[in-house]
Length: 473
Image (cartoon, rainbow, N blue to C red; front, side, top):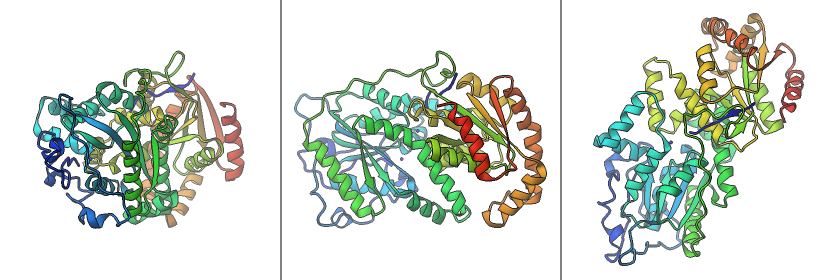
């Protein structure tokens, strides 16, 4: 029996820099509603590149390419769609803006499209607003609808940022958006050390450990989908450390794809179960073996999960990291989560489970998924079981309150975490005892629970944990 995952979402400026009169789709971007006006650009980037195209890209950059006008009688639409991936700190929006200027193409950001639709108060916008109000994740087919509307009448190359979130989402796009001759994906990559350094510089409260965890969470979220795109021959990786060089390389990739003959249209992947249909357990769809990793604060869960990732290639998911990573994307879901936390509200369990589900669906089949610190209470457990499935195994790191307190206070001397103080620690202990301990008891009736003495040395505990994970392979 395994855990199945069922499914898991910035500015639009279709205006080219100097489109010739003979190119009607690009010379007049107005029909491409709901494209964002300049003042609606995402906060993470200015409304236009900081320098004109002639200076934004070094002289050796490929020459600017204008998209061809559609043939008479042909329906207008993009010939090439480029899906853009990368962390916000890779300056993804700025890179896309420079590509847009150099290539004379169209840049669509799904978060910005969504915000524009909500502001417009359209029927679709009102439907999406209601979903967000209820704490639901926007279905990917609705994002595809937004993209399809935005691409109507737009020819040539279209850059899409913020989509897809999973392989099946790409399948929905391929089925619903007609006339696209080529699809490719560009991943603006930052080396792990570089990403950690940028994370630490962007938020001094993180510290080295926090930055490392954020970087790991981002990698875990994206690795499954990137692997799937690579296996389909769609993904090109660009080193984003140097933005100037990154733009040159990305532009060359798109120009090369445009110059090549259109590839044969691949059949869309088999449809996956709907987002809210459980796929875990016997007879489920995508089945990944899930492991709940539970234990009190300071019991060493994160340390042991990191060792399992290194030893077995597991996918390590932490509910807290996923929530923070979603907020960092500035998506509609992330903004809603940030608002709830700012107002002191508890993020609904369904939101957390949907994020876990989305991360799991992107993992290659057969991946062992470690779910760290979740479920937190019996209600979480029940909802997870009914919507996703049941874990194959639970690892419970057992440690006395005295030792946990000692460890956390010691960690607080260097961690910079505001919750590593005696008052907060005691509250966390109380919450763990009243809410999480009953979860372990309930899991003993449903699945295998391995209780591990977490008072020993890190390596000794790691050997015990590795032996249990080995049995799942």
